[in-house]
Length: 310
Image (spheres, rainbow, N blue to C red):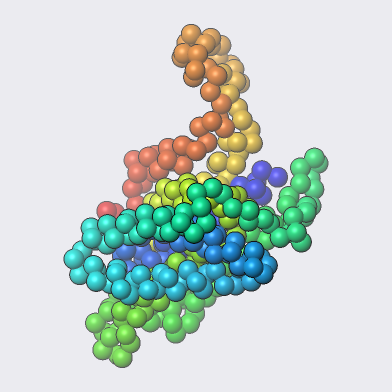
C-alpha cells in the first residue's frame, strides 16, 4: 500500500512540476512563483466548492489561474525579459510574496476547510489491514490523463509544433506569420493552469493554508533538477522517486540504532551521541529529497534525463 501512496504523491508532485518544466523548457524562465499558482488553484477551488461543489471548482480554478498567469506574463514578465534572467527571477520571486499577502487578506492566515468530495472519501480497495482511498486513485487518474494530454498536445498537434518551432527558431516562426510573444504567453498560462490543477487536487488531499506554497516550492525545484532541467520525462521519474522515498521513510519509521543493529553492528548511545541515537527515518524524511539533490549534482549534474551540461 505504501507503494501506491508513494506513487500517488509522486504523481501530484509531477502535476505541479510539469508546468514549471514546460515553462522553463519552452521559455527559459525559472518561475519562482510557480508554487504560488498552485496555492491560488487550491484557494480558488475551495471558494467555488463552497459556493457550488468540488467539480465546479475543478473546472474553473485552473482557468482562473491560467488567466492570472497569462496577465502576469503579458504585463510584467514580458517587459523584464529583455533585461535578462536575473530580473525575471526577481519579478517572479516578488510575485510569490504578493500572492501570499493577497491570499492572507482574502482567506485569512489559518487553514480553510476544503474537504474531499463525499463520493470519493471512502476506500477504493483494501489489502490486509491497509485501505487505499478512492480520492488517491482519482488523483492518480487525473495526473495520468494530464500527462497523456500534455504529450499529445506537444507532439501530435499543430499548436505543439508551433510551440517547439518558436522555441528553437523564433525568427523563422514569426516570419511564417505566428505571433511568438503570444505563443509564449499561452505556454506560461498553460504551465500556470497545470499548477492550478495540482492545487485543486492536492489542496483537499493535504491542507489548504497560506504556507502550502512554501512547503512544496523547494520540492518542485528539486524535482526538475534531479529529473533534468526542461525534461518532462525526467520530472515524472524524479517525482515518483521522491514520492516513494518520502512515503517509505515515514511508513517504515526505522530508527538510527535499529539500522545498525540490522547490519550486525553493536553501538551505544555514546557512540554517536544520544540525540542521533534516538533519531528515526521519519524525522529526516523532509530532507531526503535535498540529499538526493546533492548526490545528483555530484554524480550527474544534468539530471536523470537532462541534456544540458550547465
